[in-house]
Length: 334
Image (tube, rainbow, N blue to C red; front, top):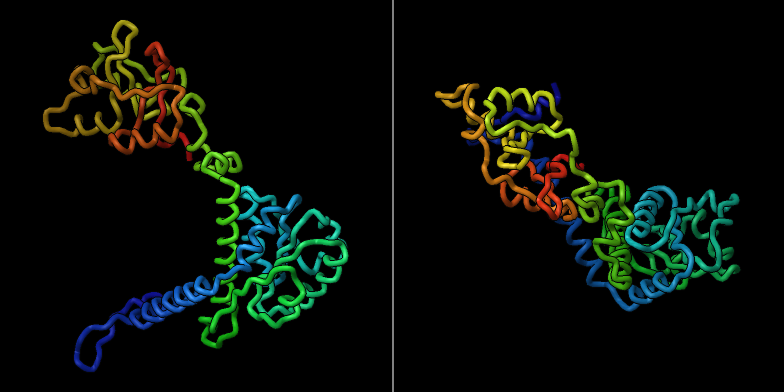
């Protein structure tokens, strides 16, 4: 009932229809405007401290350890994950747990990024003397330059914002976004220093679709034997049966063991939906006599681009001798 009420159209004093959602949309637009302005202001304040922090992280021989608690801790987890996936060994350390034994995870070869917007969070600040005593480099992401945290680290990065978009100016909203953005800026700068490219990214993301698109070869992802095949002398009904038995939405047409055409489910459906369609139609009248092919050793990403460019759903994978080895389709890699 609540959703329906919000979807109703009210009538203003002048008799015009006004959506009840308009004020909410206006508020949302204002939130985005204020957030964007805060990030722009943050960018304008970037100074030499940022470069010093990046060089410190780049020269770290061990791990970059990110610590925080509460909302800052959640932002820290994201920063640690981003760094780790972009070539900078990193992990998150919960500030409270650090004081109860987990500080043993940190060595003098590491660099610690401490996050606390107010810069006075006890669980975070109390780590400073222990880190300093062990010669661990420290960087703070905080919103107050005069805070204990900002004054106690090697490098302080200012992530202060004028106000939160929270109506009460209390909930960490704009400040969390600013801290997140600063973390992303550090990660991107490190990527550039390391020359971290798409191939490096793929090596660290072997289980994802993006990683496989970047490094997988067609032979690694294509469908192999048994492939749905019909003779050139076959009828449309034979194609239908072949498609029904196969996992693929494509049928290869051959003549004397040579590939001479291809019929996709889309093509077959469009033909059979025509007024003069018949299951007794010869396959030769339905097939594409110039089947799209690709080398089995080509990158899957290239195959995908080719399918998008040519508007086809499948490519026939062939070896150097032109022999069919399989079929690659858009849905092969998710």
